[in-house]
Length: 304
Image (cartoon, rainbow, N blue to C red; front, side, top):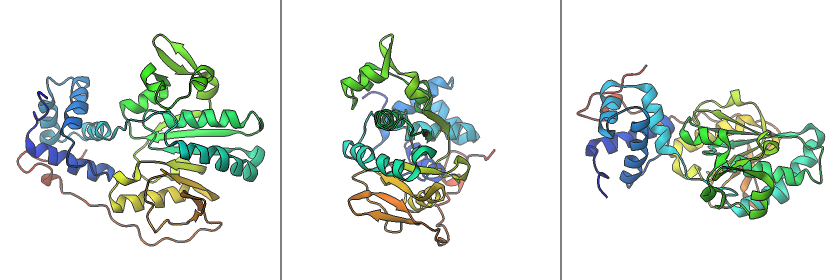
């Protein structure tokens, strides 16, 4: 395809290093098309004449704001409604009933970690609405967090194309929980009221988010480096209430050291927080890459 390899070869490696340092995520070796496509869109949004000019500025002038936008664009995930049907069934048949039994009228808070364009939080809200048809006193708040990106902006707008709602959303749910908005569909107010979104650096300390009864971090763990995986799980441990739950994707391999959590035999991708806190070992260091090593011949990023 024309233009796929328009960037200098050294810049691809530089972008991989930048993504690893800022987000703890391995971008992979075969991402030239993704880089060109997503960053080409970002370059136009930022007012650059072409992609090369934006990347020259990124590595030559050292713009921290631009670096965050670049990494966020590269990490944006393609998500759909009701991802992981087996996981949805676990939430519906096990986790929501368990949490209702534990919390009752006190209500619960759910965190959708790395929520991208919002399909997972809204799918959760639909499940909750169905559950509340039998338990109308059950109060649930859902928070979706992710890096600042166009995907998160779309999540806040709650508006999706016809193609997007066809991916994983049963027709009955589309009719019951969405309104037409021109050629698109928008989530109904009663469902939107359950969900809020927040821009958040996923490797930051999570304490400021508060405490949660269920945290979903599904289908993202494999993209993180080993030290970043441990850091994420430890951080998540700090915001899950005792005897509450952390859920991963059905196909994900969970690190053997799952701090302050016990596995649930029937549901291997669900962990339950210990009744009492265990003091963890010192946190591993993420790799620190000197700025001058991003692009050997193109200057360095200057920290703001």
